Length: 98
Image 1 (cartoon, rainbow, N blue to C red):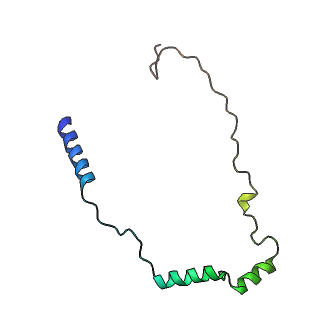
Image 2: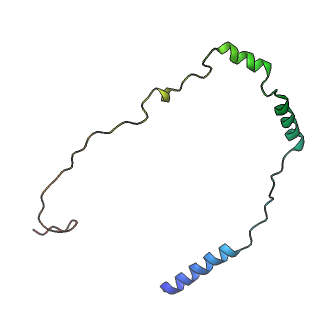
Image 3: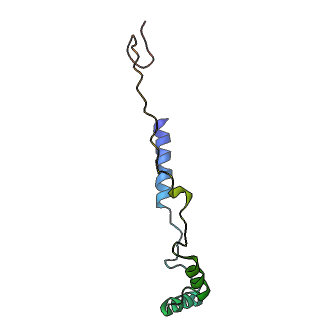
């Protein structure tokens, strides 16, 4: 019975691995006008509007305050545990010979 189940499992595995895969396009589809607009914006150097630049300049030195997690310790050391040593009679795991 084991041999039959193993043979069936192997045939399913091999048939799944050798099945033809659906063709996927190698290049993703882009809106070329949007891509061209973005490339022109990057080339001209106008990626941030003047309004955003002024807002950041008014905020001062540190526009991004630290998160609450930055003030906490990154890890905490747990309590120190001492191993419990108890003498037992017998051998093995839960097979005590009294």
